[in-house]
Image 1 (cartoon, helix red, strand yellow):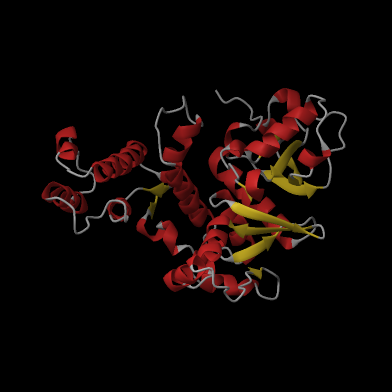
Image 2 (cartoon, rainbow, N blue to C red):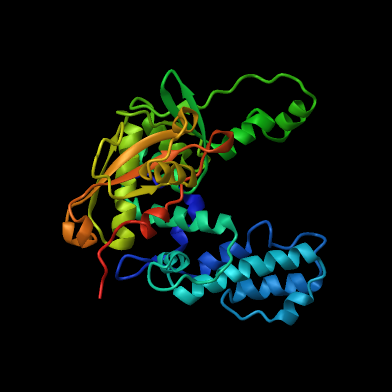
Length: 341
């Protein structure tokens, strides 16, 4: 199978016996080689020395005194942020354990402040491992929703998702890099560049452009993109909580015994809460709902006894500026799982 998502750093990690992703020195070195941390021409000797020491021994302890010797305040702060993330990874040993510790999956929530980008990067590399050997480009593109925000466009009832960062790049450069940016700033019209919507006819193009994140996903009801998202969510849940579930899209919730729901983002969470409580929700807000899903546990014993056998409803909705920001952790902390002794 062609490789994909080289940008995730998956190839720098090792698998443990229980199929987790173990943190390695090379993975840590990749963070010390980020543009925010690697020394530049203006870097002081102390910063250069610290960077060289960390590249040699990425797990070494860094004292407050070493950080204070860095003259540039921004560089010092960047080191603190990356080292905080590194220490969090090392405390837990695997990417999954480090991620779970942030959301009380295996005990109390760990009071760690991480840059949002690090959270997305953990999800990215975990999904890369989970989708190893996947032959369906639709699933890979759908998985991007869990770690990259999407710009939503609705036309004639069709729901199209394009990567927010890619859209912003095209808006500022027309897709022509620095030259395009200069032209845009000069307010000179550029040739219109259309992003490709993934179809069964062109889906195999994804393998060559996986790290460009530039294919549009159609998640209209009944289309392959929405089904692919369901399969990704199933794998995500199974990996973290060990529950075997089946998820499918529904067009509405018609259930007099509606008992439990989970929003896949903050907007759908609020809307579903209000509907469940019987509150009046405006048509304008209801229009923000992009999709609804029905989740069923294959083993009813894995659920809270009072909910055994009942379906769980999921929601997906766009927010301000037509953006969709999925929070995959919601599926791990809000499902009605049976208590374990």
